[in-house]
Length: 603
Image (cartoon, rainbow, N blue to C red):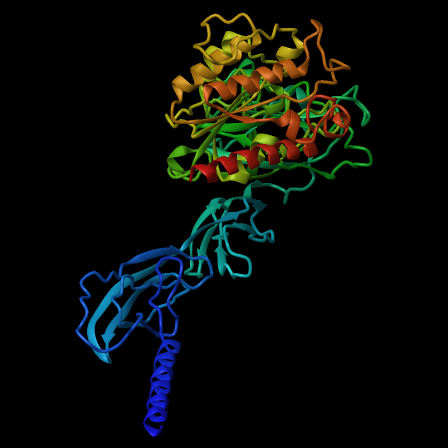
């Protein structure tokens, strides 16, 4: 009996030993998706009992790279034989950098091998969009920016700086001190105007003599190769026949050659060589001697050009000082000019273009270029008809700025296309827009579509087309062309002409991204959605959508997306067709958003 009991107890003890051994069993890491402990822990395989040394030749410990995402990342040993343990050193990292991770393989308490691999956490791409600035030297300013791509809660650690000690075109520079990000800085073009001429210290001035104007300074090199942003002069009354309530209260300014060989017929509002300083409705309560100032100008003078002020037809009379040659002038610039012992009383603010013109491609070799093809909605005097951009656009008719409609005399910075360029950090290559132009015109689809490069040979990276409303108003047949075949060379319908325009553009600028915009309601000329031949806006815009899709262009559906429609057209336009500043802002936001998203996707 005792032997039997003893045997039973021994059997029971052995069973407990086996059970205990099973309870302490550890499993090998299973592979991808599971990270090892981040505290240099050990990992041991199943049935890890001492015995014959396992073969570790198949063990894998490989380099790996991750993008910074605010989370910890670690390397892992794979394919461990049974019984082999691993411990890590320098594993589990969050911040961007390159780390050498060590893995020690052990068996039965003895080291089998020390392995190394590289853990790389790459900086996350991000953008800093620096706001452009325009101010006058000495004014206070603030450098502001927006960010894209930074993780919520992370401090971008952005610092901006600007050399604002002198006037001219300056670039705001930025530094990101957060090493977890690879930052691209965009925008930040700063225009600092300064006094180019100031004779305001003169006193005892008299009114200009219109019959002897225009006048130009003796120093004809003073304004050469500059951009004029602001003009001020003392008010000395109105020409005969005018009152403060009269229309067309202008004081003209001309851009002429320094040798005065320019004829008056060569200076027009359309080509930007004649600028009308408009004081219509702005002179009530203004007294003689009060200073008048026109800001937000953009008068470009080439090398060897100067300014001439006034003419025989001007309504607003500035002042000058008699018998004082300190700031003397020449008169009768367009006729038998003569030198006078008189002084101009003026303040001219602007900046030199020498080596720093923001729209000179030679000074912006790394900046993307954008061009526009449009009608009156996209025009602006001195821009869409400026031959310094493209020699073929000098005769382009312009509509903006327009003093005949409240809100239409906006600054160029309020226009939709200027906003788009600045919001996206692009430089304007060419704005080839023409007031009243239609797509179904060979000058549009054959000529203007091929003249979106600038005089320096720079081609646009992006082209935006915003046309069609004048074809709708002209009762042009829509047609059935859908972009599925090569368009006819002599189009007879709107759709054929739009296809030919896009085709020519793609042939000329094969590397450019082209965006086609649908057009907005036209309540100036039509009360409903159909024109004189019964064709609807939707038919024309439908053709644009289809052609853009089938020919591989991008579509910006302004009609559906920008928020301007038949119910609020009067709120966002000056005449139920041409946008005011608020309407321009809505268009710009839609266009910028579409181009920005497409650029991010391509990147």
